[in-house]
Length: 172
Figure (cartoon, rainbow, N blue to C red):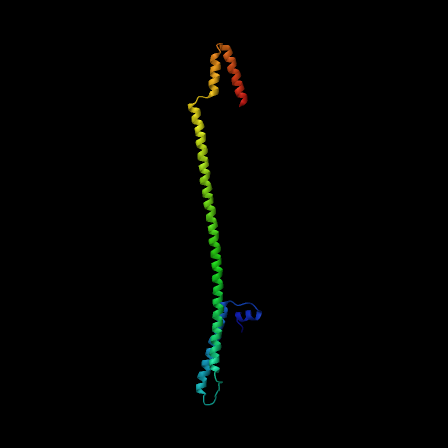
């Protein structure tokens, strides 16, 4: 019976770090249980079966296990470093984007303040003209009044007023 991880390996699919870690832990557990079974069996059958080890064979096995654990730890740490580098880049880009948005918002605020100042200045100019018309008599109305007053004949005055009114209506 094969496991899902073994099927992935035979199919050539990549395994995640967690799956590799689980497989190593399971292999270590199986090896340790076999070793303990061998040791417990060896004590009971020590007289009948004797195994000879080469000098340093046990140390080599320990060294290989340590090296395998170190390699796995190195790969795991390398993955963490890559992820940290990626997160740092993403955060840096987000910070730059926020700075750009803040600059645009500040520029828009400055533009609106400047526009308000220009509108205010224009309104002051318009109010100056309006005040000038309130205090200074309209020159054209004054001239028309003088002309009308200078004419003594009421019929001529009426005809002139009608002509002036018609001329003003045509302008509008």
